[in-house]
Amino acid sequence: MTETIKTDALIIGAGPVGLFAVFELGLLDMKAHLVDILDKVGGQCAELYPEKPIYDIPGIPLITGQGLTEALMEQIKPFGPTFHLGEMVESVEKIGEPLFRVTTDRGKVFEAKVVVIAAGGGSFQPKRPPINGIEPYEGKSVFYAVRRMEQFRDQRLLIVGGGDSALDWTLNLQPLARRVTLVHRRDEFRAAPDSVNKMRALVESGAMDLRLGQVTALEGVNGMLAAAVIKSNDGTSTRVECDAMLPFFGLTMKLGPVASWGVALQGDLIPVDTEKFETNIPGMFAVGDINTYPGKLKLILSGFHEVALMAQKAHRYVYPDKRLVFQYTTSSTSLQKKLGVG
Image (cartoon, rainbow, N blue to C red; front, side):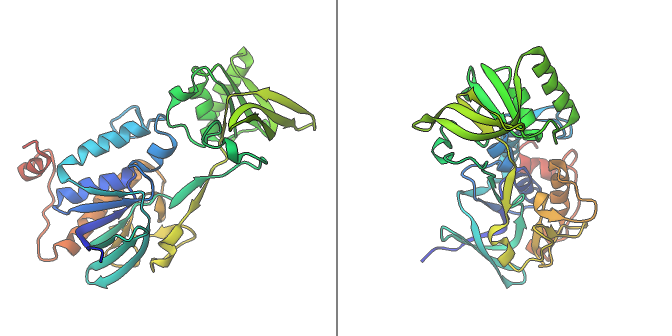
């Protein structure tokens, strides 16, 4: 029989918000286990844009997704969280006041006094472009995320899409690549205007190419691209030689088993209050992109704020007879001792 793992808090999702939840809970003497469907921590930051710069983390002018993940991991070291990666939470059952039984698809069973859902938009997968025969190239010369920019140095890159991801990676990879060709079905883009202007300036200077149309076929052997066929809006087709293709058609977000946990849903999001970010189930919280409330902004910094308030309420469930005294890390010797800096 599987041994039940007992913990104060079970955090579902090990992205930036889930990681910071460890910190806020730890300051209040609550231990946490984290479960994530990905095989590494960092959530979308680490999976989709580990080397992409992030500019809106307070006090940090610029940091990459991977850099932020590493900094958060360093910050939560004093609290010794336990990670269960490559696992999906299948069921959450309330068995006490407060107590939850949580089971994963690998058969692990947890008992936790509080459950914190920090699952972003749920499990996610990139949308595959409608190109016949693309499957053999995926993971070899067709990639839906950039995990290491150096991989594309001196390559002929075909980037497909018109949103922020497509434009951001066009600008970031253009200095590294031998040649970048951006393909979009029309001469209008959904990306930030500044990015679009920078891309057009590169095209005008001859530093990269822009093709209007759609990729209709791929050429190559053993999963390695040699060229792509682009059908222009006037119906003509041209062949563009390339070593790799990066399609950015967005992500398909799937809630997965969340819908079966008894938590109230508003579309694919979990409504919460703005005092403690609790769901309709006492002791179950939702923080980060998975939740919704009036004025919600899907920003990492918003998730950090939500986690701080969530931890205050979680403390009441974990330590119902213990008075919570609010303290600052700058002045509290007890908090500093927990952090190893006292």
